[in-house]
Length: 459
Ligand SMILES: Cc1ncc(COP(=O)(O)O)c(C=O)c1O
Image (cartoon, rainbow, N blue to C red; front, side):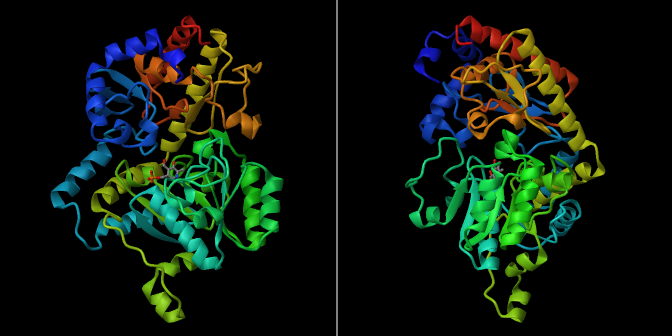
């Protein structure tokens, strides 16, 4: 946030007043962690809240403040915090042991659920995170096709490993990336999302592409949305040109529908990366997909067919605690109603927030699809109507800067002052656990927050 907005802000003063213990912890944390944080998206000016406990849709900070939560464990929670099914299963497993250094029954059940639920999942390999799942997906794609290059879409986020550590934010520029080998950068082709002609030309004009990866509903769970038509065209074009289609369903998996975005669209990729909801709020990830691709990990098939197997280790792959939490969450999602409820809540929040923007005469708009809501902060000052704004109709340039208004960071702090924790986008991920009361509280917090920002002359 520029100094001018921070200086003498009553919002910042109110936030500081309310979060004194968080401020103390933040100061202490700076002595240990770079910027005092353990995840870049928790970087908050002047500092973030420190949370003590959570339940359902709410969380409580160390100062005792209660918040409606729209982080949802970075999207890992759809059932809500401390969901009884997940917690009870976890307690049983804790008593049995947390790591056996061996296969265990829960991993078989967990993998079986992934196979049942995710259309492309003929075979599954667990990892410890979404970042790792994507890393394995890239390696599989290269080994399977014998081709080097990976096509990515600008702003689509796939974790923090070398192949994806650049171009995942707006303002992408070509050139060296600190700590990433030029050879890796040279083997990644980054193109604008949603541009069917460019995508088709890229695939048609070269024969060195192993695979194309995307977030299937658009960058950051649809904050820069792509349409089903674009994804369908990508499916066609990758098949036509012999490149694999990789869906990063780390966020959308078990959220957009029990079978993820691929089941919702009816479009089946060759490989899919999963994490977050997969393991019920505990660490975990998986790559799944076509059996003829995942057989590259198979000792017996490699021997039989005479190829060099892809190696894969990982101390916490299919960890029993993650497996048991994942089974509890996935079974509940598979039974039905959870994804629908979360999406319904998302639609309600977007509608109510837009009503507030219209009533308060704020030229911003809530948008998103499924269980997401984002605020288009209209940095260009366009003449928009929040009640009819359509994120799908926006250009890439527009939507990749949707949170670009200078007061967006102030909105985040004002919402915290008003008892709601939204992400920096600004916006958030909605859970099935959110209630109508949460939605009303959120809409009211938006009203109070924009009034506070307007009072400071920033809106
Ligand atoms: C779409 C997407 N892919 C991959 C990742 C990386 O997953 P992880 O944080 O488990 O490494 C994330 C994390 O937020 C994500 O949102």
